[in-house]
Image 1 (cartoon, rainbow, N blue to C red):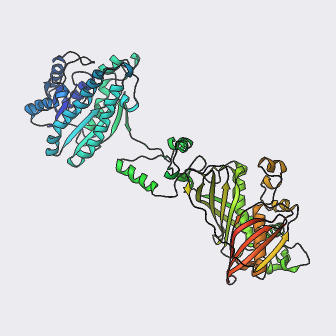
Image 2 (cartoon, rainbow, N blue to C red):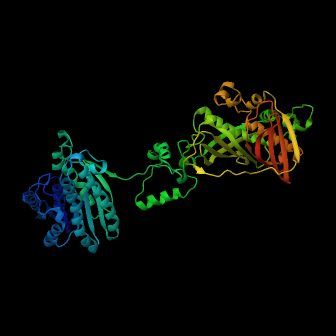
Image 3 (cartoon, rainbow, N blue to C red):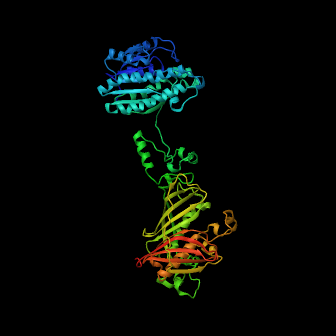
Length: 605
């Protein structure tokens, strides 16, 4: 059996101890060796009248049990006089239970200032005066236990108790701060929110009569006894207790959302309200205010955080998506044909991309590395799930804004691939949004093969709340004649052919779907155009050796219609860097711009 908790040699003051909860506390402490000052003014529940009978009766009960006790009949608004009684009778104070209280219930529009002030005076000012009087005693001796009595009204509110709820909530804040100040002096301060059929509760009619026997005031005293014991080191806590139930309350902060201050508006708050107020697994609890501010300031210091109704950067910035794909020589050959390779079967220069019988000479076009990134998008669209957790940009409104692909080594004729996708950034473009997805790809053994950045542009999807990044004009062609120009005419069914590579987006095949999106008819995949560009650079500057192709970046400036002739103009900046631009010849429209291709100096191992 565990050691009994006792209070031998300890002096306790219990206010409002003539009845109910206070009486139960006083009896428990007195029965376990404490010397008890039983304070009670002997008033009614609404604070009227006065009588010494209640306190005297409890003192007699404690003495009958063999304990020591004295009565005190002062109001708690004269708290220092109650403490003087303790000092005169017992010489010190170790325990203070602020329990006294009265009611002045009425709806707020009927409440008088007197009804307000009286409640604050008894509950808050009374607790202050008593605590203020015992505080130097406890500090000097390096020991003290203080319990405040709050209520559910102070936590949740209650109709007709604005004055009472304010006072009880004030005691919670009082105790929380006092606990911090007393910690170094071994003064522990806690608060209880009792659920009990006390005299005041019965008078208020708060609980149905059939619950009164189940919510005995005596059931609250054991928790108070523990909080007042020398063994208990908890401080600053708020505890709900009643009918055998014991629990601790705490403040919890929703994960919320950090909105960038350069876009703040009431509308932005409204559009983020669900996420701001949602409590879920990302909600956080801090044991003190310092922790809370430290965590919040750390989030504020991160430029990546922010969000709106479509992007939750708090979640998406840390989200990761995994995908596995594979391809073989037939897939590689189909891709090559879909981006215009080997149009003339008698021209041997590009047969190595489509003829698996070339053995070790078979080559895979490096721009085929864009297909796994496409599959990530399309799988998410088909399933209805976001591309990444926290990223809910509408697929149907998205346009491919920019593509960046880096090759770490030449693609093998066939491979099993593993892809890891993260959100690199989400950008506010005013009435539109931009997302940049970063996808790293390895083979099945973990050897890095290539990297993709897919920039999605979402017109009409507001970016407010996301990071603002100024537009930058990059890879501008020099004001001179290109060093090389190559052109290929696409076929009228080019989109249907490219679609077989896995990019089944209906925008490129279904006239009705394209019309609903605002286009006259289906248009060619941007990444098909991208493949033409890569092929042209390899022809012009790599002697058709695709293994020298290191990276390519380009922005999609306009749509390409199947049947357009695609002309790539190329300017050599250095031995390994080419500036590129592509236009649709018949319509004289730039379709790819701000492009650059990097080459390896020699074929990588």
